[in-house]
Length: 471
Ligand SMILES: [Zn+2]
Image (cartoon, rainbow, N blue to C red; front, side, top):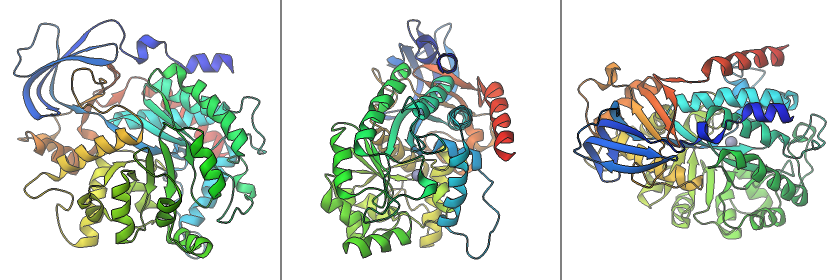
């Protein structure tokens, strides 16, 4: 594996802008105080070292029309990119999340580490081209096809980390603890054999994950008890205790069957159970939280946990609609995730988040404050919530902060005549991924003209793997 690992890792200079100074000049920039004109940013060692507003451009500055902070993607299963668009054929009876899961298990059981690396790299360049700068990789495909751990227990974590290194995407790796098929500690089923660990083997895996992200420089490792159905209360406590100061992510209340099974097991709904039995605070990210009562919604907001909303996947899987107005009115924090990666777009996730609310409530501009821009409200909240959930710094475009930046493709017709918050409205509600021009992560430009620098090679490898998987 040595050769493959080094092939997948860039030297530090190409992953973090090290040593040399870069300077950007933007006609408009969204900085922590709001929109400013004529903004000059200087960048060194992956960070913004200086920011001037109302500035004059210097010779040698790279010129852009509009720059904004890049968006965190707080929830992904990279390997599922290999089934995007391939589970849209109706089977017998009613297709549901659970019948989709059978197809997903078949894919999960067939992939080797090289294939996972190639598929993850494709997903990651698509994330970067969509304006995302960091992914929360909720990583549960751990073991060999027969369910036995690889000689290196973190072999698959090495594969996804190598994909992050190769593409330059920031990564918060969230190795998943998975032990049971249903509430009450039911034994795992055959289709889950590559996911399973004891708390002891999970601790080893966690160490392996910490080694895996080291070469990324800015990598973060958290923990991820898969869901309340996959862990017992004792295991949940054991896993949380392994990582006292890191992000803790869990899938919760995504499907009504899960809610009903939880009530049958404990007498409580999943969110109520979790809030009563686990130390939920701002380290936590509750992924989906689709099915909550009003009381659960306000309690979740008060816990300061971030909710990870994945609007495209939730629509694709028929999960339901998150109660965003009640949650945000109670001060709740959220970010967005591309989850199954069936379609990847920062603007697309935010647009569907708003549109699902409009459809459910027969109203418009549901997520905006009175008199405010919907795009700006969605963007600001998802930036902050996403960074918090991923254990990443959030400073916006400010001196001392990470140089994770998107420039908008203002040549796109969506932006004609737009300025300030209307630029975000135009990106989110009209341009989609076509609104992205360049993306910098840690001060390194990974995307230019909407295209990732390694798109050719990565796509070629992805096509090859898709052919193998279809064979
Ligand atoms: Zn998920």
